[in-house]
Image (cartoon, rainbow, N blue to C red; front, side, top):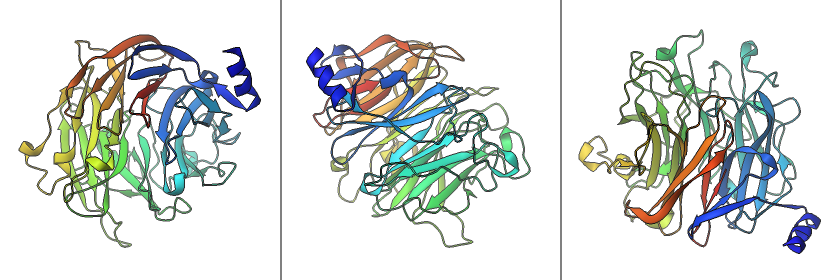
Length: 413
């Protein structure tokens, strides 16, 4: 063991602290360097790319590290943001997001922390973006993407289609401000791998408002029998101040011509009557391509919180041409067990179609908690004995599952 650690140090690789495995399919791994808010992706080589946060919650730093051995060891971490472009971790929902683009390029967005530069208009909180292109040694200097829609409070994400398109979404009130009922979903598109972005456009057609400090998720997916990819977005509404329903938007691709309108479908995913912000997050992930039947829509899994419980659903029925028919929707699956303190769901799907759902229990404002998980088969049924719970989730953090090339899973926390 000592020899292995010595070799890792000599190679500039940091061994990741390993937690005891609870079953043979799921391994628990601590985020290296004491980091929190892990985000993990697997690139075309099967390597795990890990994004994490370190530093003061109100203004810290983001790093990316890579593992070529199933998250047992990680390379020396690369800094993402410059010294003046700090990120915020406070509230958990404000964690940075990243995605793999064409050629395994990395695209990262984050909410600027205390004093972060550059700023949004009127010295408002910026939504910062940086990328690491294939072969580059350092991330590019951060750019603010907000040109008009200021008022960022936690909900944002980035998606890429692997063909050069990059989409960044966030929620904020229109120019001039407003309350939660006037908040909109904004989309800034790039067609050149993030080199340039068009100015943001409001895209939510029904204007249900947006829960101001709730997270959102976005991913590209194939819709109906078309070969193009549409953008799927999850967000929590704030209708009439009493509805915190989870909504799903499907934004047609390709992007409209200048001056045109986005073609968007809006679907209600799950109801939650609540009078105040619930500070929730959601998860969204594609199933492997081989599970898409010829002529059928892509398959995408979603997970979210409602009343302290975690739910998941396969959205394949929503992606069909007649998705408004409720009979096409897959069943809503609940995380096993009866608790009312569950938050921050995360998903990973392996090459067999099995999927791992992870979430936190007992976490809250300035309060850590426990990590829990359950493995499901491709049929949506829980795998017996393939779930567990362990204490030790740090303040403002969560667990991040990732599917490895051998079909097994790792949860970073």
